[in-house]
Every structure is written in C-alpha cells, then in structure tokens.
Image (tube, rainbow, N blue to C red):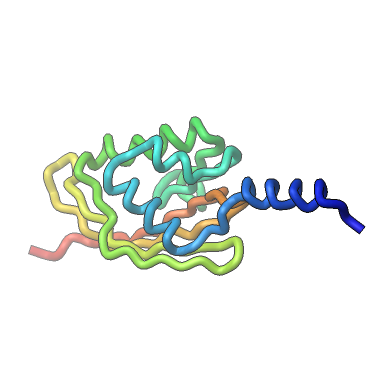
Length: 144
C-alpha cells in the first residue's frame, strides 16, 4: 500500500512529464519555420535529434545529427531561400510517428520562384522530435 508521500511524488512526476506530441505541436513547429524562429524550432527538437534533408549525397539526402548540427542545417534553409515559407499545412500524429504535408514556396538564388509540395515524417521521443525526415517533389521546368 502506498502512503500519501508516494501519491504526492507521483502527482509531481506526472506534472513534469513530457507532453504527448499531437497535430497542434506540429502546427506550432510549422509556424516557427514560417517565422524563421530558430530558438523556437530547436525547443521542439530532442537533444539527440536527427534531420534528414530532401537532397544530398546520401540515400536519405544529407543527415545532420545532434542539436548543434541540426540548428545549423535549419538556419541554412533560410540562407538558401530567405523568403522560405511552408504553406497549406496538414498535420497528424499516431503514437511516436507524425506527418506534416505542406507546400514550400520561396525565391531561389537565381530569382526563380519555388513552389513544391512535400512532407516531413517525424519520429518522437520523450515528447520531442527525434527525427525530421523531409521529402519534397522535384518540379521540372516547363518547355518553352
């Protein structure tokens, strides 16, 4: 039988437990991307986070591991496309996995407009994003 002290400890522990990831969390994460708010973005990421980009030399694109490397890669997205936005978001979470669908818009370095659909596939641990894996459509320029 448990005493009152044990019950109070359990209540305090429950109050400090991580939040369960949900669609609202992914919507807030997306909003931080659109604000170009790196500290807010990183607050969603697990300490051991991994970011797999849409393009790169590996089959997974490029893989960035750890909080500092992921933060540098996130910031690099805005350096490459300073007006980057992720619009038309749809988000869902099932257990420790989640998905965000979006339309990426912005202006490339050569001045051309970018507009492509994509998805992020997430894995969660301890209430935070452990893995963010990006998949994006590749548009082919229309024939002149």
